[in-house]
Amino acid sequence: MEVFGPNPPCVRCHTVWKNVEKAASTLKGKGVEVTMTRLDITSKDVVAKYGVLMSPALALNGIVKTMGRIPDVQEIETLLRETAK
Image 1 (cartoon, one colour):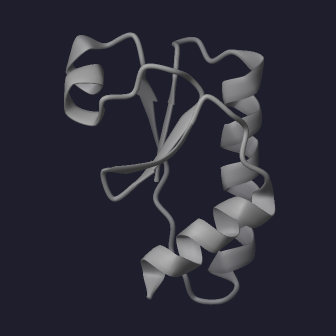
Image 2: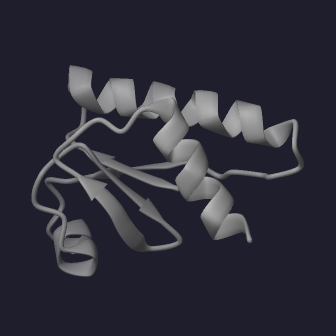
């Protein structure tokens, strides 16, 4: 899972990171491994590759799932479960 935001992360991006950690922790107990990566939204390469213009944003396996809002832990768990199928 890729978490997009500025470097250093803003409060909203930090909240998304924490929510992803919580969701990943819950799913790890169910056999789903989640790798988390922070990507800098101010990088031209990141913007060109993902098309992300608003932070915070989340992508799963290179596909942007949310942008410009803070998804809650439950929504992130749902996204991860759907991707793990």
